[in-house]
Image 1: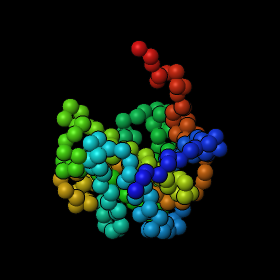
Image 2: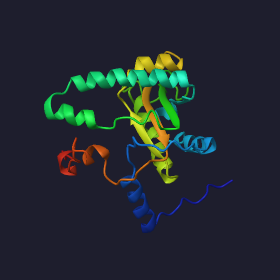
Image 3: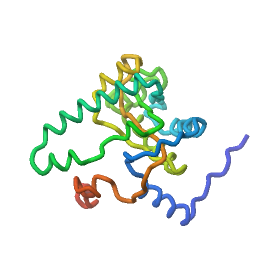
Length: 215
């Protein structure tokens, strides 16, 4: 069977894609409305066609549904957040204390995303000199999931103020899986084209000229 012709993306599509990127936000304020599990499964299937080193596909998605496990994750966040707050002082500490840093309580869907550090798939191709490529591969899948979710009106929040060891233990996953992300997923309470951390004065966007170099 011959390959299908590749799609042609016109200016209209490119403009909508740029709009999608601009409106993809790290969401912390969620409605408690349920999200169809079939939709989440569809988004995960899209994430699973992301590129990966050696085609190793090292991503492992864990849907966190049991209240006790969610409570353990919430406890880890509270402890880590308190420690983070203590590391700031003055006005910066006050700003940090006002930030909404997680949607753990309201988000109907929790997804822990791990990297299998020793997948048999891929046969080691491309990661002998840079084993961290496995982690980067998982991040590509997370990014794909995030954009796909936005296409369906869903918001995603990446919670990084967690102790990975606590989360790994709470979810009872293999010891050679490394936590890459803990995602809250649901319908956002509000929509913004600017990041919340910009809106609340924590950190502005930097200009491309400050992070683009030629040699």
